[in-house]
Length: 424
Image (cartoon, rainbow, N blue to C red; front, side, top):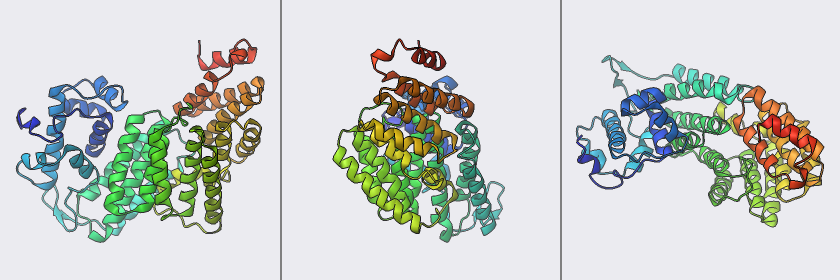
């Protein structure tokens, strides 16, 4: 395709966002190095895109990304003319490609070696077994170490979708791929790779729609809301994007499972709290407790194993205590928050959950004017972050420290904490 054709109309001449670049690379299953080579750019530039530090604004690179997208769709569909792709909006083409909508499915197809293949039950059982094994590692293995294996498994599942799959299995496989996308979204978010997290969540949303899976759509909205929230990163500014996504998740979850509804509304109550809407926060949390009580009596297992990444804090005995604690912190109820979070800490051994709870407990103790106790909890949390490689947790802890009152600055405990955190 010529450079002139690259600007044939629609939104094809617009810059690519970090999420779009990350989504295309995820769909193609390319490493950052291979992706950079295909586009003839430096690897450092590709990394900066996916971190959201810059956008693909160079005309030559925009054309190369557009060409790569068209080439991929043409190969998947056997369309002879790339201009057929150009008549559609680029963002819609990318969304449909990510959802597997262009891949040949439904019967035996010819593979690269010219022989037909039909995907059977054993293939699907293997994919689900690997998903279960990876999900079991979520609470104990650092996210950094899991991203590679889960990403490779996503590529394997996507290849199955591209090959021959009986139509009866399509919703199942779309759901599994979407589920893996949510899983990778959480893992990337834990590593503070926000643009990459949003790319995977965008992929998951496309597959959830193709599968017609309301439960998965709700989980994507919950994860996207968390990724858009300032609370998670230790800041205290409200986010309209997060509020909108979590309200959407609340509506979808009502048609799915009680436990998912409890999770969605718990996060919604936090977002309303930081927006200084205590009545809305209290009302939402009461509904979350009601939904969780229903789920405790009769909650079916998640359809796909990786869904446990969403539910593990609700399922390990901690329940809603951690969510209640941060909500009380946001509403300035320090004494109640400290009691709730101390109880939550005793109910979980999952390292990442303990870090989050310790950070929030540190802030609750600041509200009670107990700097020594606060510094001790934050120091414990930081040590766990270092031991389990948890960048998101470090950011949350640093956010709490930066909100300390000025009168604490000269205290020995604060100076010791600053030295540990590397704050000048």
